Amino acid sequence: MSVIHLHEVTKRYRQYGSPWDRLKEALTQRHYHQEQVVLSPLNLEIGQGQVVGLVGANGAGKSTLLKLIAGTLQPSTGTVSVKGQIAALLELGAGFHPDMTGQENVYLGAAVGGLSREEIEVRYDGIVAFSGLSAAMDRPVKTYSSGMSARLAFAVAMAIEPEILILDETLSVGDGAFARRSFDRIIDFKKAGKTILFCSHSMYQVEAICDRVLWIDQGRVMMDGAPSKVVSAYSEFLSRQVEPPTEAPEPLPVMEAAQGSTRILDIKVWKDGESQKRWALETGSSDLAIQIQFQSERSLPIPSLGVTLTGGNGWAISSASSLDDGVHFERSKDHTYEVTLTFRRLPFLKGRYWVNVFLLCEQGIHVYESAERVAEIEMVQQSRELGVVSLPHDWTISKHLETL
Image 1: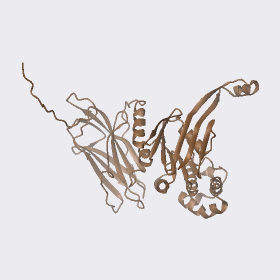
Image 2: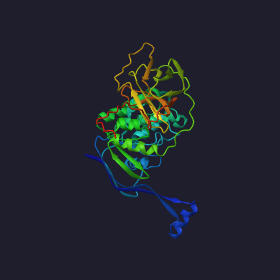
Image 3: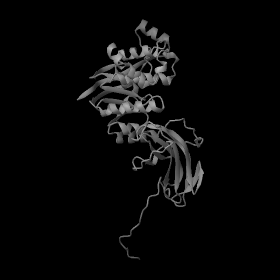
Image 4: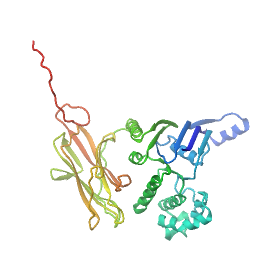
C-alpha cells in the first residue's frame, strides 16, 4: 500500500538581483526575476514499511523533496499525498523557542506533532529520560548547546511514534550513549514496519539500512532502485568529480578515552615488527598488520571493527569486517581491547593507498568512531602490470603450432 504519493511535483524559487527588482515587478507587472528550478517534475510512490534512502550532492534537491513530503514546503506544481502521521527530523531544534524552557518546548513541540496535552503529560518523563537533560529542563533553550537542543528535539520526535519518519542527516545525534540510543530507536522503527525516509552522505549506512535508494542530482531523479546498484553508480559518479589528494594528512594522534566511552584508543600499522605511519612496500612482498586498541562502553554490547584500504581517489579497494568474518571479542574486565588485522602479501600495484579504521556497533551499522587515513602505503613494483591489484593467474598453452 502506498503511503506517500507525488504526482508531477516541482519546486521553483524566484531569484531577484536586488530588493528593488521585487518592488519594480510588483508595480509594473514585468519580470525582474530568474527562476531557479530546485526540483524537476517528479512522480514518486513509497509503500508502507519501505526504508528509502536519498543520496546526492549538496544542493541536489534532497532536503527540498523531504520538506515537500513533510508539508513544511508547498510544491510549485503537482500534488503531494501522505497517509499517516509524520515526524520529520529535518533541522533538529529549529522549531524550539529560544526564550522558553526545555519543558515548555517539549509541550510545544509534541503538540505541534499532534499529541494532546494529556498524551504529552503521560510521555513527558520518558522524553526527559531519553534526552538525558533532566537537570536542564527549567533553563531557557537559548542556554543549551547545539548538541543539547538536538538531543531534546530527537527525544520529542521519537515520543510522537509516527507512521512515517523523515531523517535528514540525523541518523544519530549527540554522542556516546545517547547516539547509540537514538540509533537503536530508529532500528526499532524499521523492525516495527514504519516507513522511513533517510537522507545521508554515508553510503555505508544508506546501503546497510535502506531497501530502496533514490539518487537525486540537480533536481532530477537519476536512479531509483536497489541500494547496492544505486550506491555503486553514485559512488562512481562521485569519483569522477573529486581530485585525488596531493599531500598526506597528519597522522592520527593517540587518543585518551573518557571513562566508560566507546572509542578508538590507538592505531599502529606494522611491518616486520616495526610501526610507522608511512610505508613503501613492493607488490606481493610483505604482510601489513593493523593493530587497533579500543574501549567499549560497559552498558553496551561489544562493538565490531571495520578496516578499509582506499586508493588516492577515495575508492575502497579492499576491506575487512570482524562481523563479516565471524570474529567476536570476549568481554574484558577493564573493557579495553587490542586486535590485530593482517593483510597477507599485499597485492596492490603501484600507487598510494590509505588505511581507515571504523569502530561500529555489534550489528556493523552504527559508527561509534572513525579514524580515516591513519597510514599511507606507497606501493612499488618491478613488473609492468597495470591496474590496482595483482591477481594470481596462470598461462596454459592448449595447442602447439608448427614451427616454420
